Length: 229
Image 1 (cartoon, rainbow, N blue to C red):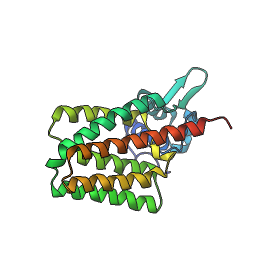
Image 2: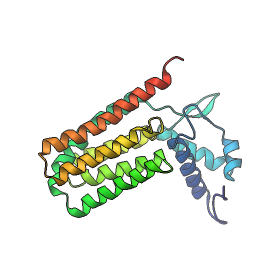
Image 3: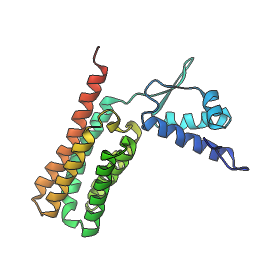
């Protein structure tokens, strides 16, 4: 890896670099739950002293991505499945409502933007699949559709839950990559309903069930991972 900072750059920029790199490795699944973060080793690898590594790890701990145990050190935290499930359920209903309420307010530009994002997801799925990039595009897709909702209070709640999800979730598509293909097809259906001027309850239901299917498949995948051999 290239040196962390240019000559003269301060410790803050080094800490930020280390933070971004470690966070990327965690959310991508490169560092799995229980992986030990050895400060000296990471410092040598990233070309910095242990100080910015320690600062970055503390930030990750505050986000719930890392746990610190005395006499053990820093480890990558596991996903809190119950918290994930609760937040996904909330998002399913909020996104369903916001998408249906916002549907009549979506213009051609927003629909084209959402369609382009979905095509990027489809292309990604059929080439070198990246769960993290797929998740980023998926989030942007739903933010475009929900963003047309005129209910500002609902959007405030949605942004709060999206932020919460960003802290508790790595990419769920890491452990269920096949779900990505169905997800793109379900996006197609949501866009078709909106363009066709379908009843808003159909749009709401399609959006809600899309999110709940992701949740259910994730829970099934986690159960299969933890089942006794």
